[in-house]
Image 1 (cartoon, rainbow, N blue to C red):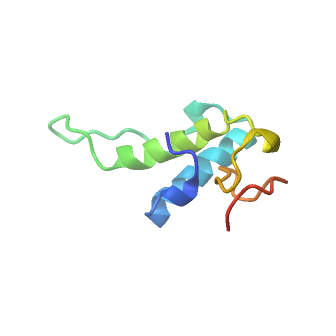
Image 2 (spheres, rainbow, N blue to C red):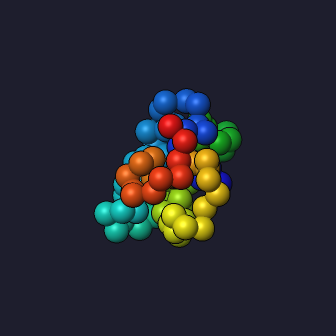
Length: 90
């Protein structure tokens, strides 16, 4: 699982990750994912699965228990500075 959005290079995937994280913050369930798993005519998976994956990973990142005292100095926070931690590198 991607634990920090900054590890995602594609800006559109980053946006999907953030949307998943924000949905979880709003109390929405994982079924609220706006990216359906489309299938091609022959039943093969399509590229839509990538957006779905990143949205779900952002949603699951909220399972991260944020305890600023238990993190390693210099590591990244998945909340991207939306918290009061001082351990993130900027």
